[in-house]
Length: 56
Image (cartoon, rainbow, N blue to C red; front, side, top):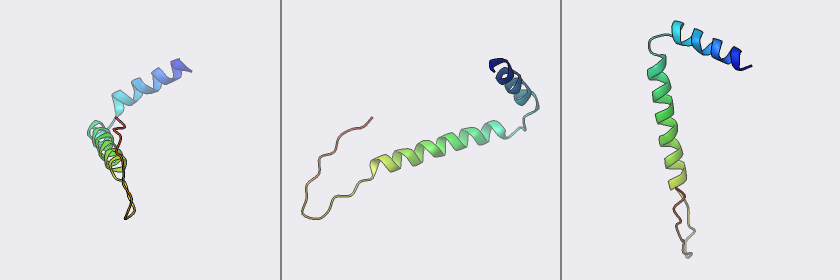
């Protein structure tokens, strides 16, 4: 299985489109931003108090 994975990775790196690396970087960056925003938003109903814990 590892041999097949290495073979696939070598074929992908040789024949990959030029913009693929940039696209992957942008996708990872956008995912990190969305995750950060999702984890930083919270709702507290009126009349209640909230304690914020750092999850990082």
